[in-house]
Image 1 (cartoon, rainbow, N blue to C red):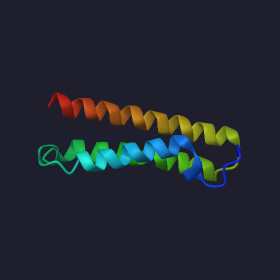
Image 2 (image 1 turned 90 degrees about the vertical axis):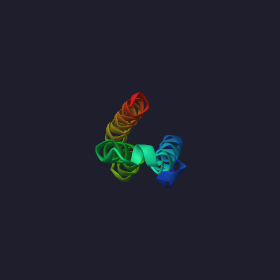
Image 3 (image 1 turned 90 degrees about the horizontal axis):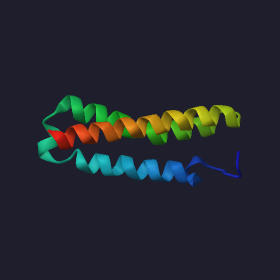
Length: 89
């Protein structure tokens, strides 16, 4: 698929992985840690983005990979919305 041998070579995976790491660092702050529901939802949506790309890569065919890439994009938008909620609080 597109010349990649491993999902870690995909730029979208690399960027979503960095987002996940930054979200994890943010969740270590004591003020945000108190909102358990928000931190859980944010952690899961951030975790989902690179996971979906990796899973799509492991599937057979470009069509399935594209479907998982779209889910990854949706997870990133969900993470953004949770970050906006955190800022608003």
